[in-house]
Length: 320
Image (cartoon, rainbow, N blue to C red):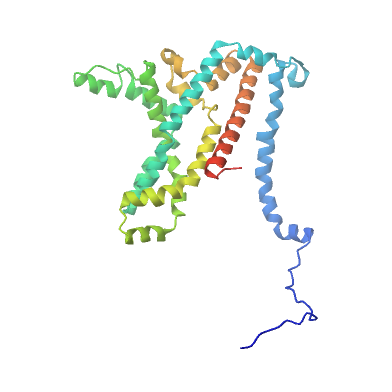
């Protein structure tokens, strides 16, 4: 039996570290990457950060002819006026309600569709299904609104004409607030679910195929594999998108409630985006409209930070 000994007097040999390139050498080698990054940075500076100067209108008695800077400062008086208006609280309530119902109905739809498409084995049918499901996303909400009125109008809509021919009473899809709510949610799912599957399908391709093979060897069925492999593999993506959706709970698009809504269902269809349009562009109260927009931005930031903190504490996954 032999033992090896190290001479303490022997010099210690360390691996040579690669020399770091100097800054000018690094930039000279990778200047193309920074040049490409310059255009997106310029876009954000001009169209995202530049318009933030207009937030000052919320704290001023804005005069169109004097301009933003020369208009009189009024501090928080604009916000006090907004918070005294009853129609603002109606729009705020409807915004939260529609976004919350959309989160319950529309958020799971792309997940279910993505799993169903992932399970398809016939490639040509899978491609055709994806094309058909993606198509509504590229249709303008103005066109979708026309389709909705052609299909669901009380007296002339295709759906009600079929019901009346079968001897059934017509359903007020667009004139009764409860039926309008169902029509609003269903239209949103139809328009967005197919396009939302893209992210989830991309996440599904990252799941190790050996997990499915091992599960098959153990005798696992299709639903068992979905439950214990597919859904856990989608968990990080689901949490990330859920946090982002929660951050937009107070933000709502203008086209969908404006195009589908009408006077008879204003109790549900009046949201913050249409409220800002009416008081800002129609009534010319630019300070009030800017104050509402600033309020939405602040509350949205609080929502997304809170959702991110909760997700980090409960699931140890977050976006920040």
